[in-house]
Image 1 (cartoon, helix red, strand yellow):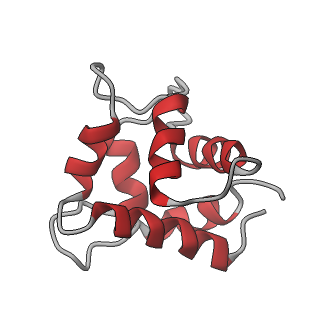
Image 2 (cartoon, rainbow, N blue to C red):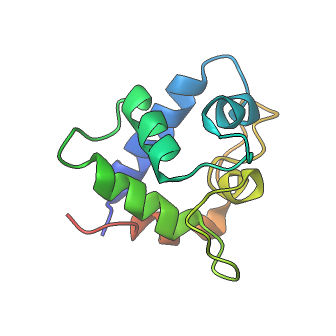
Length: 111
């Protein structure tokens, strides 16, 4: 189960990687031609964000996929609307995650 510190680490790393851009532009940079993040693309994003290390990054990927990928139509890919639930809309710098996802993200993997 992810701790509050691990959840904050993930969100801070993604925000830092985003820099002055939007979350949408960050998503578009890593998403493939299908405008979705698959496991490989998510691993690349996590690596560039400095999340985890070579031994734990796949656990981070699996946890994020589990927490964010739609349960009504799981496809092992993350769409922009699914990622928005985690990071907010990215329009305002104060945009944050949907409060309902905190519990899901905290449980995203077991270490």
